[in-house]
Amino acid sequence: MAPPAKRPAAAAAAAKKKPAGVSKRTPAKIQLPEGTRLVDLKKQIWRVGRVIGEGGFGLVYLGTGGGGEDGAQPIDCVIKAEPKGNGPLFCEMHFYQRAADGSRVGDWAAAKRLDYVGVPRFYGCGTASHAGQDHRFLAIERLGEDLEKQFDKQRDSLGRVPARRAFAVAVRVLDALEFVHDSGYAHADVKASNLLTSGADRVYLADFGLAFRYSADGRWLKEEKEDPKRRHDGTSEYCSRDAHRGLAPTPRADLENLGWCLLAWLTGDLPWQQYRNENERVQRAKEAAMADLAGFLGRCQFARGSADAEAVAEVLRHAAGLGYHERPQYARLRALLQRRADASADKVDSTTSNGVAKATAKTAAAAASARPKSVAKAPTKSTTPVAKASPRSKTPVAKASPRSKTSVAKASPRSKTPVAKTTPKSTRVAKASPRSTAPVAKASSSNTKSSAVARAAASSNSSSSIVEESVAISDGANGAADVATMARKRKSGC
Image 1 (cartoon, rainbow, N blue to C red):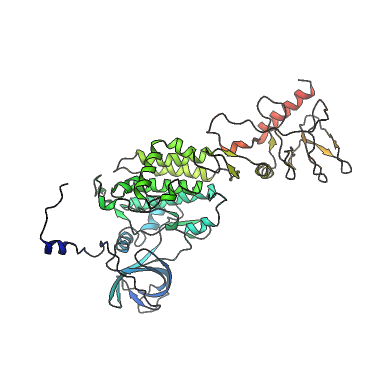
Image 2 (cartoon, rainbow, N blue to C red):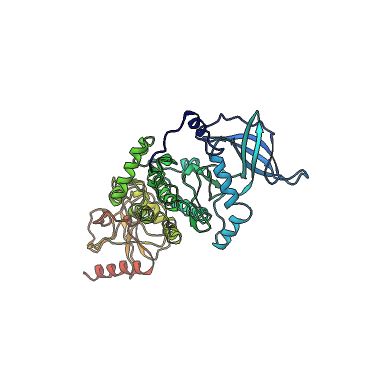
């Protein structure tokens, strides 16, 4: 579009005066004293408590109220207040009034058969004046600490959040985003510090200061057109490439935003974290990552290996494949994320540079003890079962499950020499003496005197091997039958 013609100086000066709610200037913050009385648009009365937080444009207080002059039972809440000339709270108030007022959130959750939707309950909003300055205020549900603080207590030595927790959070954020999108809005700033917790595992998407109404009555309100004034809106390290380009937020932008967050939670960092304040450089890095997504994710340090990496890739690929006016396939993405959340617990303490995990002996021991009926499975092209690591030795030793019916070569309590004890039609599994720290030899048909050495599970020939396969364990009747068959062959001289 051609630039506007030059105007007289007086007209240009008048044009600089922005309407309330869209000013780029940030008026000075004035703290409301404790006990300040606020009356919202519904004539509900609120009392301001102590300050508990500060945003870029205003302050956050504890609050109580909600009743009228009749002294109805007060509600504990959070009150956000900022000077009237600022924009973020203006956007947030309108989101809550249009999308989350009354029973809308609960009705939507019931229709979707969800126990809850992670959007804070809206109580009221209005304006007030203090010390000669007009303020907007918003009263919403009081929740717990933000997820960033909670994650900081759960990270491993590489800064990674437990994978099961990260995927479970992503499922709930996706639920909240679907509600927000169904209401015609995009959030535009998904990140852990904008997610609030409640109870043991509930997660709520908060801070709608950048929320954008992209549709109304099923009609899209914006075309795919870059606006230089919108470039890099949001949080640079997590925002979508659309945000970097200056496009108005849409559901596909929120989905990509969630994808970058999930990647950061699972790997502990993002490659562009160190220069996150250089918006153009961050944008180029994201474009390069999406151009070779498999290679990019292969260099990231996932705790559980390539299955988690592929789930992140699917989220990002899905977002990249959407048209500007197209909505995500929420059900398919939810199922994908839930499968990863339901996957077995994290088993790995360290990773290689390409994200394929190496199982440690300590982790293998924990995995086996957690599954008492499992039987060690023999590696490919070998008649020797895979051994389990002794918790007191670096030499892995096979250990029988306490409930297993298989016979065990058991060391005499008065001797360090293991004595083989057999039962017909059963496999022989070596067991360490409880009074000896030396590894115990496996029983074998040749009765050799050499000590048993654990054989590692056959390594995968591709980077797509999953960490869960790093410890070969076979459950149920099929696994037991395979080992029993090998025992019979050894007995018959095969």
